[in-house]
Length: 444
DNA sequence: TCTGGGGTCCTAGGACCC
DNA sequence: TCTGGGGTCCTAGGACCC
Image (cartoon, rainbow, N blue to C red):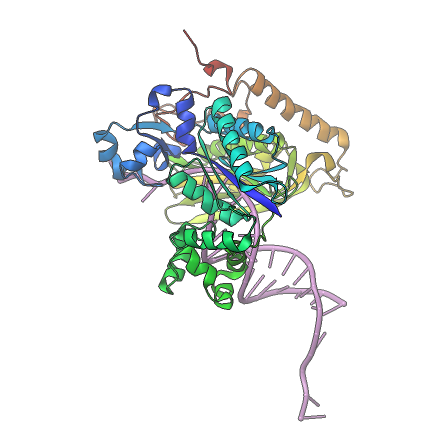
C-alpha cells in the first residue's frame, strides 16, 4: 500500500516576496491581484490582522493603513520560477519515487510503501524534505502524510494551522488502530475545509446536519452520491482511509486548455484598443503554448462589459502555435462580436483542444483560404519565427522583441495620458529577480 | 393492437481547485 | 469609486445518427 504526502508552501506568494526582501520577514505582507484589486495572499501576520482571502483592497484599506501592511502587486514571473525550483528540489530527493505537481505551490509525493517504511521513518523523511526546500529555495513548507490524497490534504491543513511543519495520519501498521485515530481527528475537522467541498456543498451538507469530516464519512452513501455526485462518493471512500485517487502521471497532467485574460485598467470602447489588448493576450498565451511544446486547434475569445458577455470560437484549419497567425484569428473573431457603444471591462483568449507540437497532424485537405495544401516547410518557417522571438526574449530580456499588433500605436496622446488604458495598474510590483537580467538583484 | 435501442457530439451550467 | 486569473471535471439536455 502506498503512502501519500502533500507538500504545500506556506503563504506562497508572500513567502516569495520575502526571499529577496528579508526585511519583510516579521512584517505583515499581502499580495494583490491584477489591477491591485483583491487580496490574493497573506503572510501569517496579515492573516492575524483579520484580512480575508479574496477581499477587495478598498474594503480593508483601513487595516492596511493602520498596521502599515506591506503591499505587493502579484509578480507571477517570480512565483513561477521559485515554484519550479521547489519542485526540482523535491523531485531530486531520494526516497520520493514519484511527484505530482498539483499547483504552483503544492505537490503530492509518493512515499514508498507501508510494508517497508514505518510511520517514524516517513516522518523523518518529510522533515528532511522540509529542511531541504527551505535551505535551497528559502520557502517554508508544510507536509501532511496519509494513505489517501484527501487525508493527506487534511493532515497538511492540520500541520499548517498548528504550525507543526509535518503531520501524519499514517500512524500504524495496524489499520484498526490507525482508523480510530483518524476518526478522532476528523471529528474536529470542519466539513467545509475538506478538499473538494466548496461553499455550496458545505451549505447543503450543514443544512442536513453534516458538520464535520467524520459526519461526512459516516453519512448515508446513496444520499451523498445523489447530492455530491461521483465526487462525493470518492470523498467518502478516501475519508474512510480507502484510496481511490491515484498520483497523476505526467501524461495526465498535459494541459487541456491555455488562456490569458485581463480586466482592463479602465473601461474600453474603441475597437483599436481591443485589438491591441487581444493581440497581447494572444501573444502571451501562444508563448505559453510553445513553452509547453503544444499547438492549439481551437481558439475562443470573449469580451465582457457591465451589460453583456460575448464569446465566439473557431476551429483552426491546422493546429498552430504561431503568434502572428493566432493573433490574426483572434482579430477576425473580435470583428464578429465587437459592438460599439459598450464599455468593455475585460477580455480574454482561450486555446483548447491542444496537441503536442511534435505529433502534429497535417491536413490532407486544401486550406479554404489559400487553396493550397499545408506544407511542412511553411509551418516550420512560422515556427522558426516564433521560436526566435521566444529565444531573444528569454536571452536578452522580456519584450526585447514583440509583435507589431501588440504595440499601441494608433491611439492619439490627446485622449488619455497613457496610450495603454487597457493595461491594468500594478503599483507595488517587486522586480522579476530571477527571470529578467535587468532585474538581477545587486549586492553591495 | 402495436411505436426501440444504442450511440455521438455539442453546449451550457454548475461545482470545485489554487 | 474601487471586487483576479487560470484551470478541471461532471451532468443534463438537445440534435442528430443508424
